[in-house]
Length: 126
Image (cartoon, rainbow, N blue to C red; front, side, top):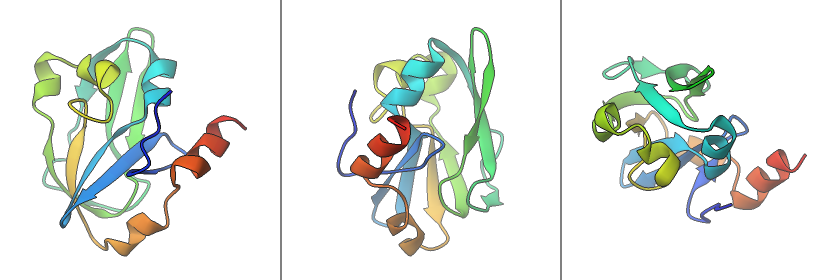
């Protein structure tokens, strides 16, 4: 399993990568593997400002729907339009082409308080 060192993680299995004042958010390799084949990604919160840990969307797999939780507070700027036609990108490339949303964090310092790769590994290994 892949846990890039340049990302921060949550115990809800989301990752965040900051580029300038914009953050990309997606689900981890572990999460997509646990979920199985993703058939639909629903992000109804574009344009909204949400608090940390609020639900920003959901991922649907063959047997279930899972909520997606925002790692930090901020404004949801855009969703990954490619996922409308190809939701399986989340399975194939969760840290790259399978990103879910772009967020303008309310405070970039909030990202620093999230888990690093080692901390996230500790969460999933119990």
